[in-house]
Image (tube, rainbow, N blue to C red):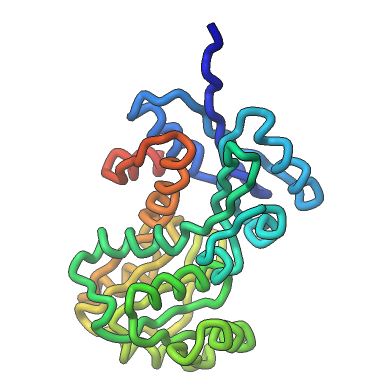
Length: 277
């Protein structure tokens, strides 16, 4: 009698020791009584393609991909979803039984799910969203907001040329502000999103003036270390609805886990606790 292979998955990045994904995925495997392991792998850029092409033969059914490999895996994959192409990066690889490598980006999905859970009364059609930052995370956020029906994105980044590039890529619903004018976006925003690393432990604080925030505005920060950034603390004091960034990490992991291990996991209090442990 031949025993079935135990499915393996993991996360590839460099560095990777800080990742919360292994404890999150281990929690789901244990909760649902599923066979499987999820392994962190620190892979240098020059070894990326060799490692990815070797993993299926070792029993891997897929991997998450994080910095600095999200763009590079696009050229390694055989099939790339439309949303990954639009965002210009992939964070989830599925190793199919026919030998093909399938690349997807679930960051935007995770962002919207976290927003809908943390601010259930938020209506994407109610008004503009102000987005701080123009990196890969901003691309995923903007794509998901436009898809959800947000009428206009007010965008500002410390380097203006990156904001202008996003306007070129995403079109006329993007309005770009210089970084020194970023605070002015908040007067008109129904949603404010920080996609930068400003406010993260070990990084510079956010210096954008926040006095334009209106009570009831939804404010979310992709930073989750600390869980409550100065942006969220100030927004809370001003009567805004705040949503921390941890939920995005949790929700973006759901589609991959379902494809790899055959069970759609639930994001609940126990899941958050496992990620924070």
